[in-house]
Amino acid sequence: MSFQEKISTFIEAKKDASVALSDAIWAVPELHFQEKRSMQYMKEALENEGFQTEVGLAGLDTALVGTFGSGKPVIAFLGEYDALPGLSQKGGVTTHEPLENGGSGHGCGHNLLGTGAFAAAVAVKDYLEQHPQSATIRFYGCPAEENGSGKAYMAKAGLFDDVDIAISWHPGTFSTVMTCSSLANYAVTFKFTGKSAHAAAAPHLGRSALDAVELMNVGVNYLREHIIPEARVHYAITNSGGTSPNVVQPYAEVTYLVRAPKKQQVQEIYQRVEQIAKGATLMTGTSLEIDFEGAASNLITNKTLYDAMYQQILEIGMPDYTIEDEQYAQAIFNTFSPEVQASSLVGLHKGDVQQLQGKVIADHIPRMLPEFIMGGSTDVGDVSWNVPTVQCTTVCMALGTPLHTWQVVSQGVTPIAHKGMLQAAKIMACTAIELLGNPILIEEAKKEWQERLDGETYESLIPEGTMSPKL
Image 1: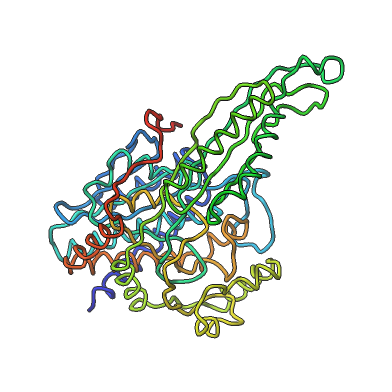
Image 2 (image 1 turned 30 degrees about the vertical axis):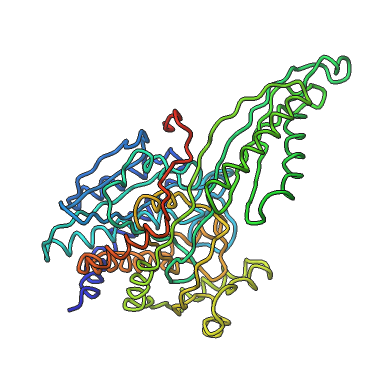
């Protein structure tokens, strides 16, 4: 029996427990740094499998590490369990039906992500119990990937310093290895304070904080023309100062997220944004307080590792889908706009597009894409600056499903999602076993990692002296 068959057997034997864990986390969607119940579910599951656990690491109440084995190499599986605001949704339905108006939901599939990584770590543990060797397996429960970048705090605290290889995944619409880098980002909230006044009787006595926010936004919009085209700058007015137009607003807030391919580029653009904010205070006679919200580094790719992982994807193959799976996926696909439907196969090789044309579940493994920079960000980037890192994605939802939508939440407790999660667990576990049995691959991955860093060392974007978020 091949090690792929053994790993598959281990994971299938415990699939009911894995599905139950994923669904339990889905049912208690918790926002960044508030994942108390989700973390506890994961902690108990790890301990039941014989892992030693530690919590509250890097000053984060909901950070978790489970460890099995001893010695080198150290293989890390990265898990997440945070949800998104405003995406409450019933599971397994094909219409928008919030469970709680304004509530949270797992709109990025992190209930699946964390559980899939857990199942992979357990499968490698089961394999090592039958085939003993020097190795340490760690599961990292990482809070706040969506907002706050928990892994950045964990990396800054040195929690990955002795790790040899880090392995992760993300739910998606294709099953393939992730060859993309990501954008570094920096998030801050600008808090303006002015002076209230009667907006009709004595407007000259007031100093409008909302005017400062609006002037800052205008200034940043003009800045967009003069930054690199790969950069992204987003903002949200999180406090407009009140609801009465007859009061000069004494307080207002705006949160900005700056992204760029390199950390240095993010820092340079942010400094210009900060100067615009200070200029807005001069124009309005207000004062300014700046609060750091989170930051993530760009991701360092590793061809040695994603070649090895892609081979495991091919060896394991795709799950089988039922008629019911197809019918459900079709109904979800029908909820998308024509524009979204038309973009469902964008970026794939021509031959893969032909294989998947007219389908609503990607039951074909596409060829690896060339390396590219994705438009989003992830705190996995901070891990990748400290240790060679590899990720895959598997089919957990209908073709074309955009992340951060109610459709992701609805699909997160369906057989399609569960099959993709278990497939990801097998891929990650088999990649780890391949590396454990082939130490030369680990050394090659480390050599490539050093070459890609090109002499740079990890410097966290988190400002010195910043306290770790608490519940």
